[in-house]
Length: 571
Image (cartoon, rainbow, N blue to C red):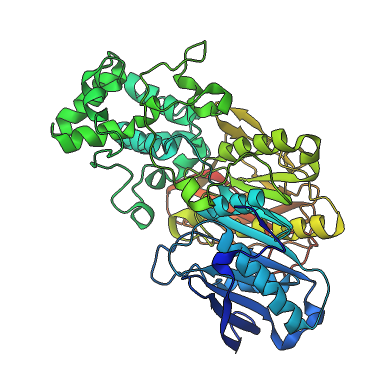
């Protein structure tokens, strides 16, 4: 359904204000709460305190997400960061949902349009109002649905860690296949790919393991994700509970399991090291119908290969030279979440407004190259106008999950929401003043992997780069009780501002301490020393933060990156 700025959506034609309150957290603001009569959709509008028109620049920011996964979450309530950022950025905040599952874009559009009237009355202004919609993962599906199917409701869109309507969930299936075959080698693979490692993740693998490792990364699952193998393989219980694999039969394809284990062309009968390993795993698990489904489910991605013209390069490994599929194909497709969440968007790139996509290079849930897949559709739909409409910023040391990071993730990942906030400010300036956002990150697609240049000047985008110096091959050798000199160089791209903060994690435990810098710079060298009291191997990290204007007191739009080096400490 197409929604315009002036149309009336009959489903959301009766907004009702339930309460207006003055609140103090996270900052003083005026909250307007309400609902749409005859629906379960609620909305909240967060305005500057005391009708402060001077603090409002005629814009709003609206976060969207389709589902709440915990009791404390509510899809109709903005969190503290969304409220604080919007009010600090010359906007009010809007959020709409029903507290649990809120699909599509129509309810977000209705809330945005009603909020404009509330804001105009509250601030006593008749100036034009500009709006910006953003959301991660399933929320990115809603953002794309809105970008393609609304006109004049929002002027800019920021889809984050972008989900797309992919054939099967092959990223999750590939990871579950890796869990089956590679779990015992995860530590060795991780160590090879860590700073100072051998660089050869195949060194300890047999033929079957090597074949599977090549296959899953040709799907586009990032090599960088092995820094946290528990998440990659579905062992991080806080995110995946019992894991990625399932014993459940596929209700939409009930004959698949028999074909997988009995029909020529399927891995269960394949005469190859990987086929032999799969059959051995079944014997090890116990040959039950549940376990047959468990293993067969993991490899379903091989048997749902779309036409080559559709651009799914991660599945090209399963084609013959003439483009036809290598393996038998299933005639049915799994039910799609993307249509459900997006309001049945076409994902054809026909966007109405400025778009800045945010993608992260450690993301195994929404693969980095999926953002490139959608960018190609925007380029095809808009032609030459795409350059004045679309940007994509790839971020290193960032994964799919929300910020801030803590625990195991803090050892190697950044708080990437600051980059989202800068993108929101840039998309607003682009739409309102015609000042183009900084250029996209420069990258290549190699076997469905996104490859970016090492240095900020060549990489572009928003994120700074940082390099920890080492004596050789990313390894520093040290002695217990002897000071170790550490030096890092941070650089910002054009539009990335200046480095304002340096922090060090000497023990590799995710706990950072502030480092000294003289003043913000575009190219900054940071030096320090540290004395280790125990022998062992440490992954020392440096984390840098940049800000567009070099403002050392800024709370929002901080642009971060990390680098690490292996320090081997002996007696």
